Image (cartoon, rainbow, N blue to C red):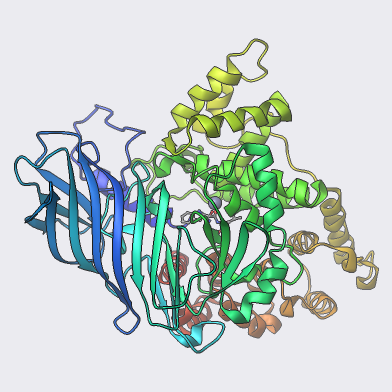
Length: 628
Ligand code: BES
Ligand code: ZN
């Protein structure tokens, strides 16, 4: 799930390997963001003003970025910004009403970090100044996907969207691309007249469609939350402060599926304090959106694969909404502290789902989450299993899988169990208040936890125990293992059916939630003959399911077991969805089943044109690994 960090981590390693650190001196600084070139100790950005033309033909954004900056170090004469695949036309320093062009040069390009832009600061440039950069993006921008009409729901208009997290904002805006810096922003965006632009800012549902749109984002945000989309988008309200933007073809289905969004928002406020961002809307994108959702402030970007028709996948909405507190309000200081964004959000997501739906449903989701975590722990190397791993040259080809999410969630559930729900809710509410619109490292979190809970008399948890979660591999003792009677029953049923103790018609599938179906499929013994798989598929319509997660689970099994009767439908699945979670593991299973690596390549070649470049790159990396 945290796949963007795979290449990021690897690239970081090569960076640190060549940095020439003095031997035996431990220069690793957990509070430093190793994924930016920006010299944020010397200059910081407070505000960004964008003026952009959206050119679908050239597949580029073109215009100006004006950065309002402060100089922290009076001796600094060079300012470094992050860029990637940007063309810079000019750079000027504006100060006290006068403008002077500045000298600039690109540094060496790094595969993951992009290209540093070095700007010479004229001597005597004051404490506050503006930097005006004229630039354009390239069609290769890793943040932007330019979709031709055929890859949209309507098929008549092109659509463009951004995905900035973790290190891609720099491929559409030259800036200090690090969560350590927060900026407010404003933007003027010019588009083809019939299209609408939306951003992670103050979208007005009543905006006239003129082809020129203005945005303000008065709350300071880290750069990875900068977001834009342009397309044939329309709005429908969900509740008083909530609504949906999407193509008209998906509007009704989205309104039905996400009807509980307003209730989720109100519940989150009741639990963790005020929602500080104004409106909360959803943007439902075309299938190529690489994630389930992205928590762009005021406007979460959402995969259309959640449109199952029965609201069974809306925990993703609860998740993105929850980021309004954990992540957007209180932000991980560096990507190493990502568990403070994702783990805490997964925890809050579950808490919201318990209230809006019921605890049984959430326990089912917890069991599935736990199973995925155990699987990941089998393959993630030990030094990457800590919540806050030390990213150094012992970690080679590693990634974290679901550790930040699931182990993070389990840690917070452990604390909740230990201190009681009421005390822990109070703790979290005060945590959000204390660190609002700021960033936090794992160490600062531990100190705050220590001060408010661990050091209290009679505390059931010691600092040492907490640190075991954050710094040690595996799962500490005392973790409470998620349980669900419904899923236990489904697993037992799968076993009994496999052993011919019950017939297919005796299994109460009609009563099964999608989560129970998923667990049933995952619980089938390895040596099942194809006749049984065929009967199951025919009886349940698994190959034709509308539920993307059920399909994901089924086709992973189809590929792993080489159940070739369903390969045609498997390819339909691989072409229908673009969210990497839904397809990458299916390619992975196919590529590693001992027979079908070539077939996986062929299917990928046929489908890749519709995929997001990041998704395509992850699948490709998976296929390359399978070859070894
Ligand atoms: N912020 C993440 C998506 C992300 C993570 C983008 C890392 C880039 C780098 C988002 O909130 C998320 O976690 N999405 C999940 C949702 C799920 C856990 C409910 C997803 O897309 O699967
Ligand atoms: Zn998340």
